[in-house]
Image 1 (spheres, rainbow, N blue to C red):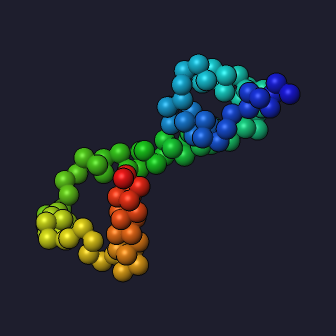
Image 2: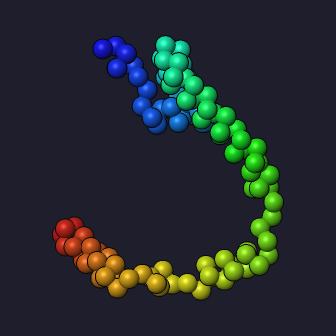
Length: 106
């Protein structure tokens, strides 16, 4: 029973692999993994995969955005109205929600 209570959730395993798990919970999860070698092997594989992805793409964010892409994005951001391209039903729904919200505030 205690094993089920202390077993980590998948999001906790992901946080452990990412180095973002709360330190107190990290100790508990690592103790649980020590008692569950199959899961520990899975976590090691996930950690190795994360490291490989980081190595493969580590310099990508340091490179400048090409000028042709930057100008394309800047042009769209400056000229695009907020509702442009939205389906008509979404605009209708959005305006209806605003009307309903104003009625609820009264």
